[in-house]
View (cartoon, one colour):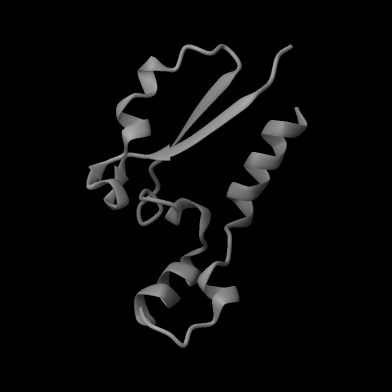
Length: 90
């Protein structure tokens, strides 16, 4: 059985104290069914922020404490979501 695996990572991950552990170990991925995608677009290259729109990131920076608009705060980037859907559709 061949199950596709999509690994998405950025270089930086402040959640883990600096460099992303996934990025740091990407060369150890030997599964031929695994695709590694590096997210390195400016302001979208940290822990989870590559999934979010510019508007969501700006809103989060301007509104760091409640009350917040959770829908805008978590607005996902359609291009990234479409890339994920296309990966699994193929």
